[in-house]
Image 1 (spheres, rainbow, N blue to C red):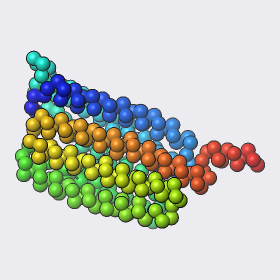
Image 2 (image 1 turned 90 degrees about the vertical axis):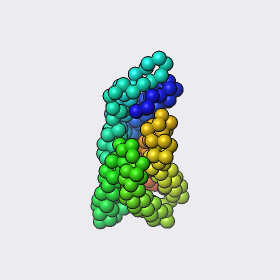
Image 3 (image 1 turned 90 degrees about the horizontal axis):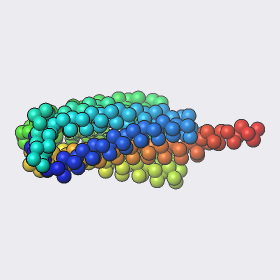
Image 4 (image 1 turned 180 degrees about the vertical axis):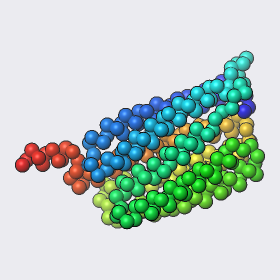
Amino acid sequence: MPSLSVGEYSLVFNMLSLAVAAMFGSFAFFVMSQKIIGAKYRVSMIVSSLVVLIAGYHYYRIMGSWESAFSLVNGSYEPSGKPFNDAYRYVDWLLTVPLLLVELVLVLNLSKGSTGPMLRNLVIAAVLMIGLGYPGEISSDLGTRNLWGVLSTIPFIYILVVLWGQLGAQLSSASESVRTLFINTRYLLIATWGFYPIAYAIGTWGGLQSAGAIVSVQVGYTIADITAKCLYGVMIFAIAYQKSKEDGSLPSQIEEKQLAR
Ligand code: RET
């Protein structure tokens, strides 16, 4: 670990703290939101809640690890000798990426036969993507980082192609408002998931183990995680709400029907 200026150290610390707040805040919202959508879509929101709860815990631990990896000496943050634990992030992705895939595929509400095999392939690809990325992440050798980075990109592209196609296939049958939501989800998916390899590449090309590279990678992954988990969950909620409204399964609509009887 290099030594960091107070500004560099604090930028990462404050971003991690923001992530903890965003994850736990989203957890509360996703739990409560289940009451106002149709029963069919609730599993999606339960999965969203799980994702942000797991991530909130991991961010809390990452923050602790960041704090103990440095100590303030004469106005700058020097490495304390305790390693900064990058494994929290990867273990977090290992758990949350498959859950995010489940969440998205469920809200698509595909036919029973096609959901299972598609999810299985996506989850295998996600595990490969993360498992292959980790040896590169913890290496400070340029060649090793590039090799594992490229290998990890293969399953990454597979996931994006499948999801992009599946979301696209829904467009023709969806109503105008659900279609807009799907189109936005597609862009959100590319923009947020695409951010991870970019942050990784900055870590590789921005001067291995330099202060700038380490700070950029941490800030980059944190912004990507807040978007991919919290904002994404809100998009899934919006789709679930709109679809429930259209098929008349909103709890408020059911209540009205019962009153009218
Ligand atoms: C790595 C290594 C370099 C190559 C690629 C990567 C992709 C990581 C991704 C992570 C997504 C995480 C999400 C978490 C949300 O909970 C591993 C950085 C392609 C896409 C969506």
